[in-house]
Amino acid sequence: MSVKHPPKPRLCIFVIAYYAEETLKSVLERIPEEIFQRYHCEILVVDDASEDRTYAIGREWKTAHPEKHMTVLRNAYNQGYGGNQKVGYTYAINEGFDYVAMVHGDGQYAPEQLPRLLQPLLIGEADAVFGSRMMTWTGALKGGMPLYKYVGNRILTTAQNALLGSKLSEFHSGYRVYSTKALAQIAYKINSNDFHFDTEIIIQLLNAKLRIVELPIPTYYGDEISRVNGMKYAKDVMVATTQNALHRLGVLFQRRFDPLPSEDHGNEHYDLKLGYASSHQFAIDAVPEGARVMDIGAGPGGIAQQLKQKGCDVAVVDRYAPKHAPDGIKVVLQDLDEPPHFDVSDYKYLLMLDVIEHLKSPEAFLATLRTQFTHEPKTLVLTTPNIAFIVQRGMLLLGQFNYGKAGILDQTHTRLFTFASLRRLLRDAGYRIKEVRGVPAPFPKVFGNGVLGQGLLKLNELGLKVSKTLFAYQIFVVAESTPDVDFVLADTRDRSVEKAARSEHDAKPARAHGRARSRSNAAQS
Picture 1 (cartoon, rainbow, N blue to C red):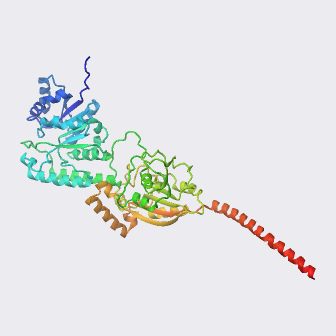
Picture 2 (picture 1 turned 135 degrees about the vertical axis):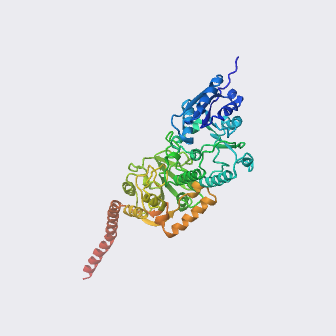
Picture 3 (picture 1 turned 180 degrees about the horizontal axis):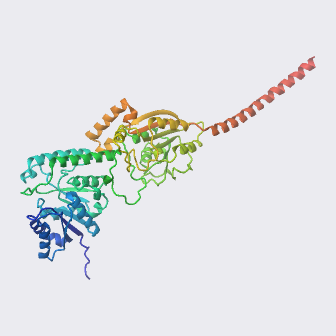
């Protein structure tokens, strides 16, 4: 009985080449033979419109090695370093490869390291593996990296880690191996065609929560020609990294930094902001232990989990079933753009956290909800983005009004509010406003809860003391309900009838006593 072996993974070795006539043959010769034994392997050489013999040398090597599966392409027009990567990665995805390894045709990165770099992908521990020259402090310098490049690499990597909340040893190595499934989840096709493509693809992997593993590689600097303008590259890298920080904050949407849509995850992308000054933390703190709470627009159910830990009796309402809601709570599925069919009478606290901006008509929703209120007030805890946030004002001044998947200009937001317009909405809906606070931007969520995230948060909180309208990222309100006039009229009628009946009942003995007294007086006369 023959033993069936699992199929070999399919690997595309993508040799990115530009004016590489002196080094390409050597690079191809140095690809370890074990690679061809462990993988169904194809070598893809893409010459980026070089005007030397790079393409011809690739074709000659293919002819001389018919045992190797190889494709040699030449771009008719120069695509740039990033543009050429797009060609290679798209080829690997379209041809059904499992992995794609980028090897530079100038020999700067050792092909001999491929088996080791591929291993984390092969055993399922990574979605991308980067060869790092900076995992040892002196290795890069010993390998010939110029001091100015070494220092610049360290400075840029430190700044990028701070802005991205990452811990990579190097952002600027070009030795990379990717899972094609990972590449298919990010918008690499709309990245820059320039050298900072490498930074943008790291940002995309981090935003998609894909796993990056770094492994140390030797550094080799020969007499190859550097085509990178160092100052322009540094500027482009920091601009892209800063844009992503603003993108994560929801104030400057960058489509390329959003993971590509897959299946509809409903409300799964709304995660909690806890442990620092945030709308979620304020809301949880506003609800006393043991309270009866209805969370309207509950999202995945994280708030319900926190309230359950406070001993609260919780019900949740949302269009989608909350995947993270604790057991034993009441769940109501409802599109909040439809008239409410849930009953709030048993709940003292009503939460509407980042809900009203999603509604087509917040006025109609609040008016319909009000029909359930009585003279016993309910406490409404509500949050919504502040469209007058200083960053949004600045972007509008620059002609930018960019909707995205999250933040103030979330694509699902239909109504946006300032402090004044929100007060007016709630007053018209019959609420007595008890507290209004400005909420700072969620810097710890974007930059991590370290020195940078906490420092920016404290700075934002200082700004709030100067002006809530300018420096509040969100608006936090606590208000008490009052019944609508139809309830008041009906209640007044009922109470008046009851009072009249009691008065009539109380008056009967008095009238009887009065008649008896009159008869007694008449008899005495």
